[in-house]
Length: 302
Image: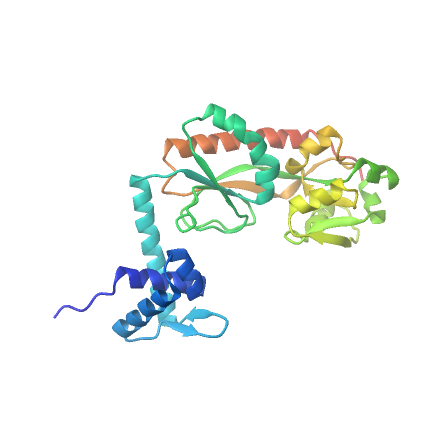
């Protein structure tokens, strides 16, 4: 007698719940009701004869058996979605941080669209790990500090250059001439990169204690604070080239290569598409040009 097979809907409901640790989140992702998710999982547990989830007041976690099942299902559904994408390719989605999008990508998009009228781009704002299939991402710009997904096509874009920047009035008021002068400054930082000032001093070979007076959630907020004269901010130079060239910000100690590199990740199921190759080539060329402009800002002696 043939053994009953679980329904695909039940497997989908369980995989999403186990991955998201929430039936509510799973119901939103799959566009069904919370009750439907619960019924699917209950029927699956009854069919398999083992509990798959442990439900608490704050989360829904998979049991050891549930974890093993969820891992296999996630891989299987990703394979299905990737196979469909190869037959019916949709628009390319580029994933990057909001700051890269605001200060680097958007200013270049008009020229890209003019040269590539047949390529439809969409965007995903994220700076951490990514699941290319689940998040429907084609290409991602990431820091070398982020671990890439398995099987992703990886290409180095450029070394990241970093610069302390501030408003012109702030630099004059604090007589900023050499890196050691930061001791008298109000230092600004980001919560996403609390080690930034220490890394900068390490690259310069300086031993100096630093204390960040104010920390912001994102680089775009940090840059705005520097523009408003709130202190000295340490940022990737590529984000502030326009402000430096216009005189809205100054880089009193120039720009130096940092410890990080910018990487380009391409999902394996779209890597051979001509549109993907065109976007990859364009991003590489633009980032190389940007890196040269950052390098042109000479550094001063300590």
